[in-house]
Image (cartoon, rainbow, N blue to C red; front, side, top):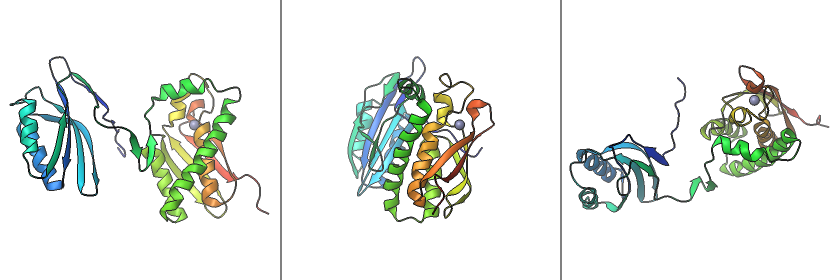
Length: 258
Ligand SMILES: [Zn+2]
């Protein structure tokens, strides 16, 4: 299997009789963090999920712990952690069977604030778009794609690198597994293959048996317009929504170059 699912830890649930607690540690370096994690596992807590971020001279480490078999109290565990040299701060929550993430806000990818929405909620919102849903989603996508190019073009990457980064980012953000095929940056032509498009799922009930990836093809068009310097249009040639094995897009300049 090429990719594995990404469970984003903002809520965890354990079976009846078991308990969870969330811990947030501020550590000065990796060695300190490893020592803290060893203290946690030695206490009988099990690490269920979490995330971390190193920023300047500090690592923030967040974890959901299953604490059913904890050999000590939570307070005592927190004290042991605080006593480790290099652990600057410890926060934790009281035990619960169903535990929502307690300490972090807002959410960012790089410096862009993000929110998490269920695909079903996106679909519900789109149903209130006035007529011409497909074209509207496409042009909303074009604007967002142009903005995406503007953001990432500041990184000083080559056009080839930017194309590859965008391809990876569509997957990393959960939109689908995308692959650019024979893309010619000079001519602005090529094909794009997409597996597991979120729009196929989002618009399943609204556009049954039809092409559904309108925002994505607009986003591609906007990004590729920025990248190539030509007005690019993207047409979905086949879609999983209409029974195809994968979605496929054809990329071409909107008007012939003069
Ligand atoms: Zn599609």
